[in-house]
Image 1 (tube, rainbow, N blue to C red):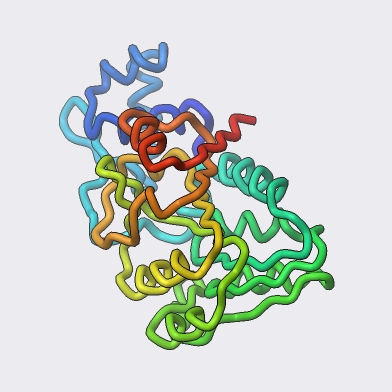
Image 2: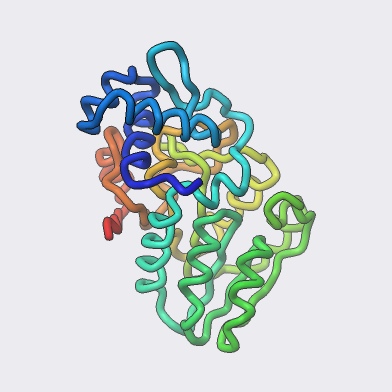
Length: 255
């Protein structure tokens, strides 16, 4: 299932509040209770929300991510907008690191017509996509391949990336919490992302609106380590203030 715009608005509102009643959702969206219940059921069926009597909340797990297919479908149009915005800002003839994630995979597709790129990645899906660009040199990180998403993790990946200093790191993330922390679920993946943050002259974060106020167990870093945030909706409170304090430029792609 690919959620429609109303369902994405519903999802973002629940994530911003933590939990809400069906009546609050109907008032927020300007639709009937029957429509809200139908939307909630569909989102609960694919694991984006958890129902309770009279309301709905975000899934409580901070230790396990949702499945890859669910992540691919969640706000796919928003991720593609983010990817186009990033590609429009990436110059030709530069060096990049792209990490694991469905959003960075969209970025790879948007970079197919760039010239003279040298791309380091621990994401085999990114490598496969960009290898179709004859003007792009792709360097694949060594390490352990995760079968579920073709991501490469582990100490070998960390040691490999330490050899480089690239112009721009374009990273995805599973969660941005209200304390300004960037978080993910797999500590092995986090170790790779942490070294990426320190081996790029600029760090660009690609994160759709579903990542705000989402819990995840392992801290990757802080907003203060990011130079630019590319997202698809205005960040909810308290993130505008956090971004200003961290001096992060926020690029919002609404259409």
